[in-house]
Length: 328
Image (cartoon, rainbow, N blue to C red; front, side):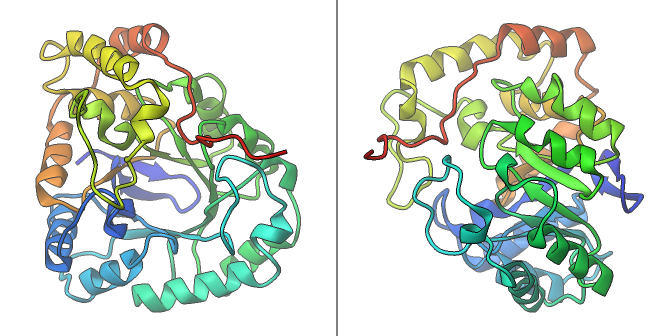
């Protein structure tokens, strides 16, 4: 498994990270034993970074059980403090006082430590950040206090949607060590300013949604439906769906000459940029984990192919916005 250096800690982490969103059950059902088996298999094959959140249901508890029965080297554990109360709309800014009132981040970290069964968390992130929160305040002070206390080893933020540039002032501030953002074949815009800025300021980048909720694997069909509770129900229909499928079909021109599969193309495109520390993919099913891991046996994607995809296949849209506009 290819590794990259997490800048602040100067530690090697896997270029492919175990994204634990699927442990919430948002991509279909699974048993706890199946999930732990997939986690162990991933760790055994060199995927040493796992990213979860308080928001991901029983995810932290499942990872804690996997850690308790794991005989190998301790993986790099990242988790996130969740916004208090239900958000009106995920893609609409809220005040930091409403989302993370004083003391809430600290309580979230302490809960995560108990659920995971660890003495410290390698990366503790806020699961939401808006530029209007600025680059200082009690919320950032709380994160730094956790760092000083040794409860966490590094701190960062996770951005709510495709608007990654909102984090640039915070990155320049030098007060955070990592930013998590959306980055995939259809949205290569982090390459423009975000990734160079992170590299220049030695801030780690966790790329998420690298397979765009599975759509970039080629699995989507015109009549596909998703089960109750599946996060993707309606997601691809903010589109329209036909446009999405058409654009995925256009990417198949690179398979198999430049990539063995669309999964390979997607993962290698994101990890081709040296500023990307780890690309997160949901791997709660062992079959998917092994398919993702196998990609890193292939050579790096040629620079000219990266550039061609970057400029010819970008599709700027925001599937994380509200389906229905709020009443004014």
